[in-house]
Image (tube, rainbow, N blue to C red):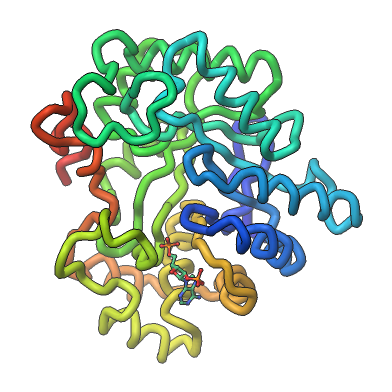
Amino acid sequence: MKTLQFKNGDHLPIIGLGTWKSKPGQVYQAVLWALESGYRHIDCAAIYNNQSEVGEALTKAFGDGLVKREDVFITSKLWNSNHRLEDVEEGLTKTLSELRLSYVDLYLMHWPISFKKGVEFAQNREEFYTYQDVPLTQTWEGLESCYIKGLTKHIGMSNFNIAKLSEILDNCKIKPEMNQVEMHPFLPQEKLVKFCKDQGLLMTAYSPLGSGDRASSIKKEDEPDLMNHDLIQDLANKYGCSNAQILIAYSVARGIAVIPKSVNQERIKQNLEAITIELSDEDMLALKNIGKNYRFIDGRFFTGPRSPYTLEDLWEKE
Ligand code: A2P
């Protein structure tokens, strides 16, 4: 399996299994199928509310000798309600107990957004946000401390733009090593990719297939169809593979880890097999010029008249 390499020599398998939206009752089997088909990278988060089941699957896989702990790369993410310095380790400890692990390989600050303790979603209610009193650098200090204690092998963030990354880079003791953001041909994030590369951060692309199974409450009307875009279809015909595999191969070709979510055995297998597809420079250029710029996960659920956050503040202007 092709991997990305961290500075200390650790390897991140470039294709991982996404578990956002994988329901309890499905994710146990999905993780086992993934490990059986050769995945060695599972992407998790506290807010996905399914980590206990992922943990059960990992325990089963380790117990059966399917894989060893040290051969699987596990990522998880700190939720917005544990951003205070004293709450960060507690967030990770809970995740470790759900996953039944003594460490994760990578722990990310999930969003540059802080909620009061215990709040899952603030839903525009002002009293739930804690923007002023929990600067990102404070949360980062909490992640650094988890790293120093060996609870995570690497630390990083998700959904950070250049300004927010710079705030951390300018004030940290331990440099972040990963920024996980939405990325696909409709949202290539070229500026951010260049910045991360220059600063020595690896990247992971989430929602690489357009995240079509999102709850309708966080979907916009008239969303463009990434998976069935004409160019994606044409390339799938040309390479003799599925549309999803083209989208996965696109990220691999850019040297960006990619975490397609699936709970279907065939699709889980197929997504990993995308590793064998090598898109030509000409086809990568065509994908670059696809002519649409679209963010599926725009974070609007964190904004609103009573929220201190705005979309302009969250995202990069490309
Ligand atoms: P399923 O879990 O039933 O396979 P994203 O990773 O962008 O969030 O996209 C996840 C969505 O894409 C889910 O609806 C998932 O459905 C679907 N999906 C995953 N892999 C494939 C594939 N190879 N072909 C078609 N749909 C896929």
